[in-house]
Length: 300
Ligand code: FES
Image 1 (cartoon, helix red, strand yellow):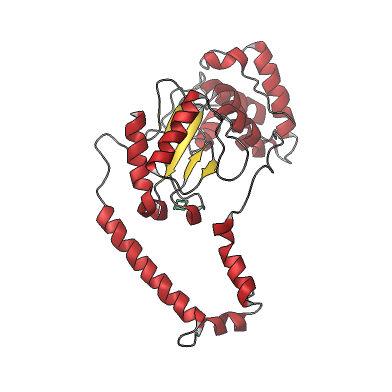
Image 2: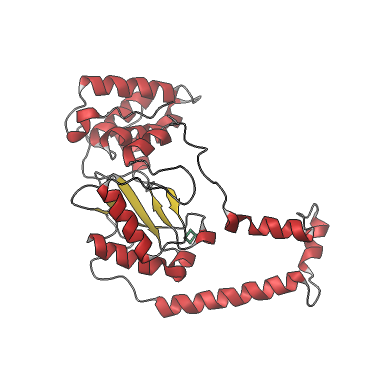
């Protein structure tokens, strides 16, 4: 299925009621989504993505529509929308650029990338450039630590990044140049397009590009070379913890312990705190809504 954007001119003013044509399309799309679930309320998460595919964020009118369609209160819908960081309570940029500053990425250069790209764009966490192109975020671990430091653009992976490569990335995105992630789809789609896919309307590109890269497969290769296999019983697991002196298991344990020690030292050395005016992901106003649904937080 081809990804389409139902927003048209409607997204220009998400504080006004939906135009009739947009509303009709939203209702038709929502009906498809709701039909996939035994209970209608289970469709709330994809419907919120559908709202973002039109409005570019979780608007007050989108909350009201979800509440009406799913027989929920606007408070219940807001409660979900404010819980997950993928739902944006302010108009989002065309591209969410997330810099992983969790432990491993941070010590591998993520903190430097964050400082560099934040200075380059002149914005901090959960802020958007004046041209509406880039929303910048500090993000938590994306389970791509084997490619640290990792940057995401609309949740596509950019592996082994540097301050220079990330600056080039945001410049390309702002200029409208096609950008290909390291793994996954052949190009990065904009926020509304990605939101429509997340709502359950595939764009047919899910199988593009590489999935697991070489770094993710090292363990599998070593296991194959050495004849290792997963223990099949509790006895085998217990036996595996009693490593012989000088064995692979003992060496792996020593290396792991040494690595963690180095990691702790590096973090201690780099613990300089945030720059004034820069928010961490835990004290950001990301979930403060711009709008309250017209009917308050009661039943829509
Ligand atoms: S710490 Fe950055 S991807 Fe895991």
